[in-house]
Amino acid sequence: MNRALPLGLLLALALPATALADTFDAAGNGKLPDTVGINSIWVIVAAMVVMFMQAGFAFLEIGFSRGKNAGTVVAKILTNFSIAGIMYWAVGFAFAFGSGKIAGHTGWFLVNFGDPQKAFPIMGLSDATIEAKWFFQFVFCAVSLAIVWGTTLERIKFGVYVIYAIVFSSLIYPIASHWVFGGGWLQSSLGMQDFAGSTAVHLIGATGALAVLLHLGPRRGKYGPDGRPRAIPGHNMPLFGLGILILWLGWFGFNPGSTLNAIDGRFTEVVLVTQLAGCAGVIAALATARWRMGTLDIGMAGNGAIAALVAITAPSGYVSPWAAIPIGAVAGVIVVFGVLAIDKRLDDPVGALSAHGLAGIWGTLSCGIFTNPDLAKYNAVGKAGFLYSGSLHQLGVQALGVVVVFAFVLIVSYATFGAIKATYGLRVSAEEEDAGLDISEHGMYGYPEQFIPTPELVGYGAAPTALLRPSPPTPTPKEVPA
Amino acid sequence: MKMVVAYIRHEAFEPIRTELLELGFPSLSISEVKGSGRQKGITERYRGAELTNYLRPKVKIECVVSDGDVQTIVDTILKHGRTGAVGDGKVFVLPVEASYRIRTGESGEETLQAHPDAAAALQQ
Image (cartoon, rainbow over all chains, first blue to last red; front, side):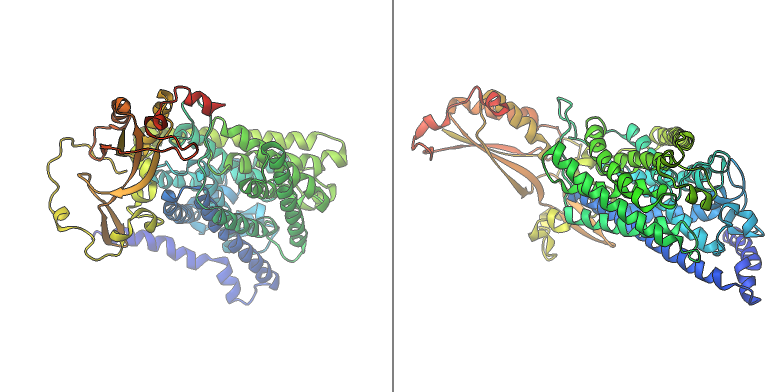
């Protein structure tokens, strides 16, 4: 009896899916054109590369955390990715890419949407199957969600991920991204250009990161009694570097995949544009770090790569290859100044606010300067940039889009995190923070040998029998884990 | 001459060191140690199996001072080391027979004098 209801619900969802799946019918009739197969392969391959970015975020964050907070990142990435996957299938994709100006409203649970070209009009330019497009857009949502948590390392309660991930992947990201690149009003009415999501993915994530950081506060010990910031060095620069390179690789799915189309060959030029920007970003960030900080900072080299790739995300389908170099280089400079300035007040362990937020804003605005008129026409969104047209119109549109998205995401996220703080709480206790999230949230260490003395780790006769008896009465009842 | 040996929580070290510096006692050594006492162990749960860890990490401070300064050092450690919970640690005071400063070859109390301006000197 108890099982009947949920089972019936599942059947209700599953049956129409098999009955109405357009791909399935077309394949059965032998009517699926070759281009559908080719474009779908490209979209799925690109999406899998973007999915690999989750590994990039994991290693980047692990490397920038202390050793006592390494394991928790693994659990976090898996949990967020999984929650987002289900929510984005259920409602997120319909909000983001269904038809509608303010929010999409077709394609709930990816069933009963009829003709996909009409149900998801903005993606009608590509004939890849809707499941391929769903997976591609879902991994974007997951990237945006991963960015949110960059500012929260080493002190946030695990349950917060679960609650916010549900809200973010079903409402915040889908609605805001619908406005920017899902066919919503910023894109279709104003002509805002954001090819792969400098604003729609990276700025949304970074704005969520800012909202949670404002509630959460810095890690213990980040600011001395005099209020000056102190370094809390991450424990593994090689893992950080691995994370950066995986993310860089991921961008070759992120930007070129956003063509959703292999037949027109446009994606290869997007690869070139993306690569040039990343290179310029690393060089510019290292040079800026050497100039401002006196050292060739390893973390800043990595941040420079990410910032440049974030910046080129919006213009990657709109600009000529040469423009990628100034766009990436400026992002590399911005990220160094951004990290140094933000660190004075806000504890952002990985530099997400600079690398994804400030660079995302710059990248979105850069369309207004560098967009090539031929490519604007080809993509059928917006107009040429200032350098070609001499008009500030497109720059204004880009700026308006940035302000609208930033304000919407900040307000909704700030309220969500405020509600979580008031009910469930955002932060672990000071004692748990000192002990590390690995042991306090998960009961296990990321690096057991570092925390468990060898005599007790070998596993035989480690615990003296006397200690196994109930502990003797102690004068104080309070117990601190560290 | 006495050696003060204290086993404290990690987070207690910085306030203790800051105050000792201000009082003119910059010379001390620390080691990261693991030990057991009344404080409960930490149980690691790994894929359903448990491993209890009774040896807990502490910071050990060693500081050799003149007899007259011992109480100052001990009081500072007690003041900042106490949370009131089990596991705050212990302080021991040991006699010291001789002392030499390697750089100059000086010996005895000479090598242990307080440095009232130590904090200011470090900030320059």
